Image (cartoon, rainbow over all chains, first blue to last red; front, side):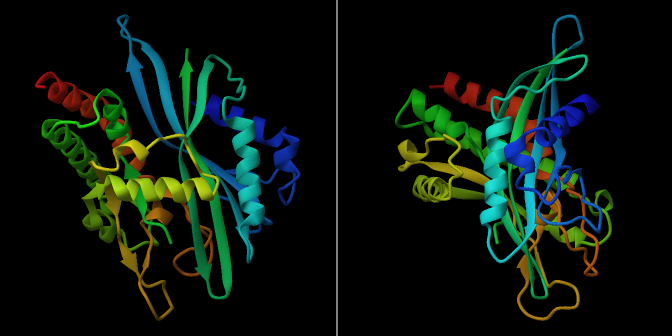
Amino acid sequence: MNELRKAIYQKLTTTNDVTSKLATPTSVFHGQAPPDAEYPFIIFNKQSISRTRAFAKTTAFEAESWLVKAVDRNTTSNPAEAIRNAVDAALTNGTLTVTGGTVEDCYPTGDVDFLETDGDQTYRHHGLIYRIVTTN
Amino acid sequence: MKKTTLYSRIIPIVAELSTSPSAEVGQAVKRGAELVANRAKANAAPSNFQKGFARGGIRDSIKVREVSGEEMGRRQTTARRSGNDLGVDYGSVNDQITYAVEAGARAKPTGQSGVRIPYAHMVEYGTQVGDSGGGGQAPQPFLQPALEDSIDEIIGLVKNALGDL
């Protein structure tokens, strides 16, 4: 649901321990950062969704997988890993407020850590895959 | 560089039921992994990806690999050391076999010579640098949706196998 995207953005941009580590307090982007974005920043997007139906033939709950990762252009992973840890503290079992639904659970199910090189530049991706369960 | 890998969590669950799961359960887990791999291949059809990647290579590289409990134990130790412990205890399955679905596609970065590097994880999780050296790609997940779409069937396969014990 789009409401979940808004809720994650809201949570990340209002958590001081997260925003204080980013290039700007709003360096949180859905899907892809703009080309001129300063490092480090956060990218988040939905990776998958599964719906469980109930007897009344309506969706009883939805389980969505969201990727939330810090991206930095740096010679060390320390800043990106610090952001990842701050995101973890904010989201895991955290309160996410969505309109028209209730977030029942939010927990990490996998980690994402990789480097990307371009010439003499190294981009560091450090994040987590979250499973977020919502009911209507 | 990490390859993009999804590990079944079925074995740790089964390990709680028995210290020595039957061969039937192992085969059920393997069939579940194959189910995920086939769905991931369908998701990884070249037409499903944006331009900028060696797209067909991902689909062709997806495979099921047998993973020993010892390897899972090592991965758990590595994860703990890097602060990524997710609380999944693979330590109790050291004498058992599980299965991983992997996409091991490799390619030379455009305009660069040298070794071919893994890139499937960059498709799954996104990049900052495009194929032509500018503008990254948003994530285009093909493994995670395959796993989500298969979970109920995998549980059913294991249930049936347990029913035969």
